[in-house]
Length: 196
Image (tube, rainbow, N blue to C red; front, side, top):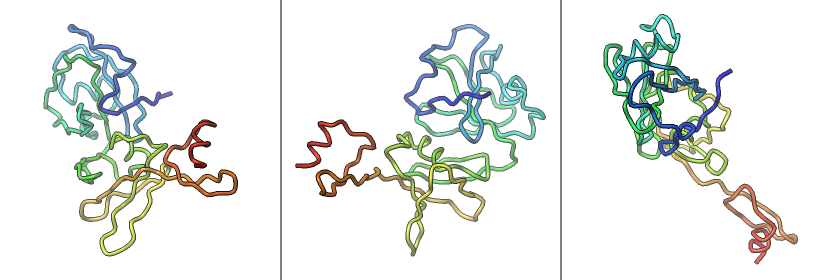
């Protein structure tokens, strides 16, 4: 069963470092950001070699993206080599697809290899805590639409989808008075401060 891993650019998988000499452990994930570890013998494998070692066959039916430290994704051509020697484990996303879909989150452009993407995945790609943020589809000339965590949003419409995120606001009632807070969990002391 695949394990979910923190894919934020600042996260280090299990805080392990990649070895200077092979085999090189990497993580290969899917469109739901479920990752599994794969061992790669070569220090500079091609995208096809990574896909084959990850047992994603036939490799020519897959797109492979490298997850950059900035949080952005870089698509690798099938014959393109990538250097695995780094101070942290490398992460890749594989999609069984023949096309990419472009969208924008908070002004940052992403390419994605699947027709659908979840609200939760959008927040993770934006390097935000899914519990404390919402993601919205910008609707030109209309009202922006909330994309729920479990919703699978269809990226196949013509054009680039533009998403924005906002900090969630939570309504609490303290001694009969309604207050708005930004944290989903509050201590007794914090609730007392919200009352003031």
